[in-house]
Image 1 (cartoon, rainbow, N blue to C red):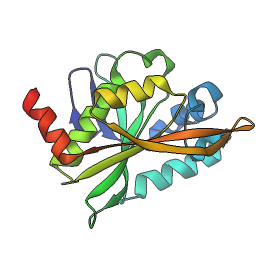
Image 2: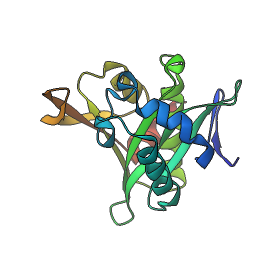
Image 3: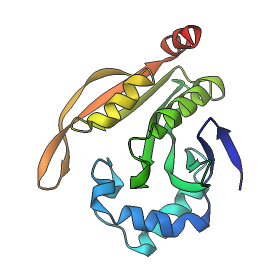
Image 4: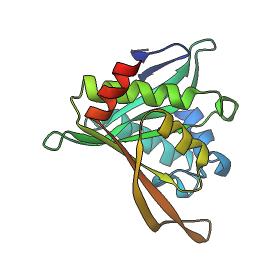
Length: 184
């Protein structure tokens, strides 16, 4: 196990092949994947989940980290930064918490702050953006607490469960993040 980042209640580690069964279980649960943006529209077979995990483990252009609760040492989900542009110094944040028992406990805020800090301090990013379903009010609260600002709405940009859904674009810029660091 390789601990990458750590905070009060969770740590972030590299993903491992042994994580396969948990991801397969999570990806097959429509309640868990309800607000997932791209690939998790349809339940994955175990083979498809294994292919996804192998691609994720080998993709050096994406930061993908397992979220682990410190007290139980249990994997809760994964998060990271994708679409990293060295020219624009930007990236896109994502988070997936598959363990339903961990929802609403503040882990999302903790993980988001950890990765945003890493993005600005270590990846030298200027802008970190994300997309979120307009109806996912819990996630929007988490992102707002972490300093993200709504940039706009992509109207009916995602088709899920027989209808189109609006998607909100949010971002945080380095100067905004730096200002937040001064307050703390």
